Image (cartoon, rainbow, N blue to C red; front, top):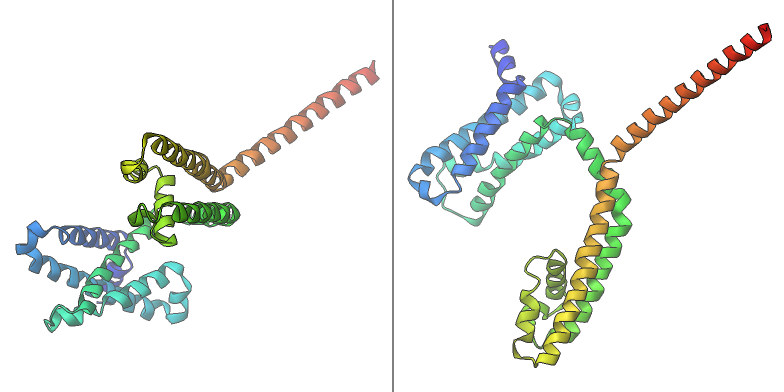
Length: 268
């Protein structure tokens, strides 16, 4: 029995298959067209939740609590299991659709994150993201402040004309950032200039075009460039180290050749 549980709960390939099947179940549960089959899908999801719970209990029993919780991936598994297991109580006792139940059902999507532990080189990717965030923090802060300044300016200029976009600073900040991403940025000036004269329409459109160029084309591009450059710095450093080692070997080879030539001249 113990050997069977070991082959099941400590088999990464098998657990990966279970996780992928659970993701498929969650995807199918998002289609209302499959509502007649929801009962079977819900049942499958809850069975898989029980399997994940038993896996956690077995690993804690085998490894011990301290050794188990020391692993970052086990910490993630523990949090996901703790958050998703209570939904079983609502399912087993057929409780009414309370808001809490809806929240617990939504939380089960967190089980998808277990799939990440099987992504190759994920640790180096996460390390690169963390390093990039640290290096980009001041650039991100500067971009945030630029967005806030432009949003305040837009708010005081257009909040009476277009309150749905610039009614307050929060709305203005969101609208301004959306324009920086070039997502439907032309809709905002078109809405504002609908009742303007041709002269004011031209100036307003020119103003927003300048905002998009400064914040979207240049601003976000600089942030992305710095972020990506730092993400790739590990590869760059490795290449630089290889080039340095190659240069050192070439210098040693040149020194040896010079030494041999000098010895030959001394013999002559």
